Length: 187
Image (tube, rainbow, N blue to C red; front, side):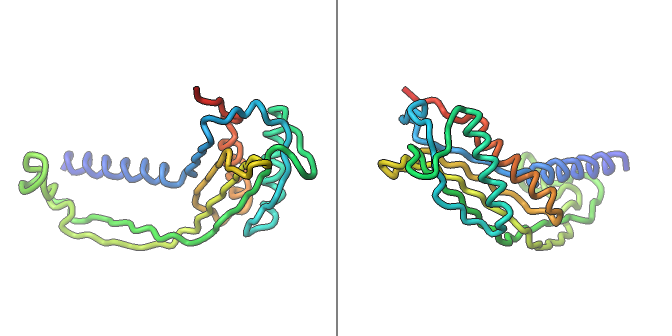
C-alpha cells in the first residue's frame, strides 16, 4: 500500500510540474548575428496587426519604452529600423490521458529490464481533448534601407479568461523578448 501511495504521489507531482511548465509562455528570439546593432539609433513603426486593438497600444508602448531605455529614438517615418507586430489567436487542442487501475507490483513485460505495465498502471486509460485558447505574438525589426529582417521575437502562450492576467503576460512577454536587446554581433 505504501509503495502505491508513493507511486501515486510521484505521478501527481510529475503531472503538476509538467502542467506548470506547459502553461508558461514560450519566448524565442532570433536575429542576424552578423549585424552590428550599435549602428542603429532610430526606429519607426510600420504596422501592428492584432486581434485585440487594445493590445496594439500596449505592445507599442512596451517596445517604445524598452528601445528608448537603450538610447533608441522613435521618429514618425524613415527611422533606421522599421518595426512590425502581429498576433494570431486561435484554439489548439490538448489531449490528456489519465491512467487508472493502479494495481499491485511493477509487473513484467516490456521496456527497461521488465518495467512494463507498472502493476496495472495503464490497464485502464481515459483520454480527453480540450480546446486551449492560444496566442502567438511576433515582433519584427527590419533594416529600413535594405528591408532585411534584423531581429524577431516570438511568444506563444495560453490565454486566460482573465483580461488583466492576459495583459500582464503580454507585457512580460515583450519585456522578456527584449531582455538581451540590442544583441551583440558575432565575430
